[in-house]
Length: 130
Image 1 (cartoon, one colour):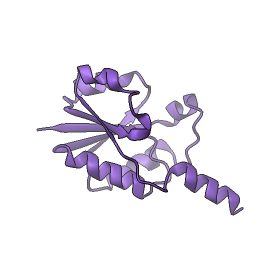
Image 2: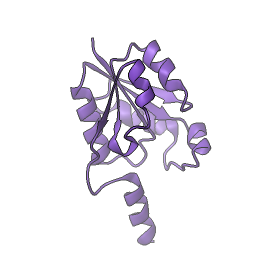
Image 3: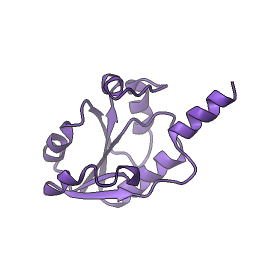
């Protein structure tokens, strides 16, 4: 079985998230999604609108996602790759080159982002409407 893994906050779910999850799933048989915990988001100075548990439930309801795991730190990726026998690591191309050290453990693929949409765009639009 070819296992694929990706990571993210996945807050304010939008079509770009769905696209990357679909394309990641197409690269293998089983997709694992690492979701940033609330504590990890605080360390990254990132504020999510939904709690880790809420984001986890939302992702588990998406047909492309086979398993959701918590992401506690930047450093856990190698451990996860080994633990879950990962064949392919996937991230959006805005992270291009930032995870190349993982190529020693599995294939690393940076997928193009969906143009015109991001959580930041949604948050900025909502702010400007208030």
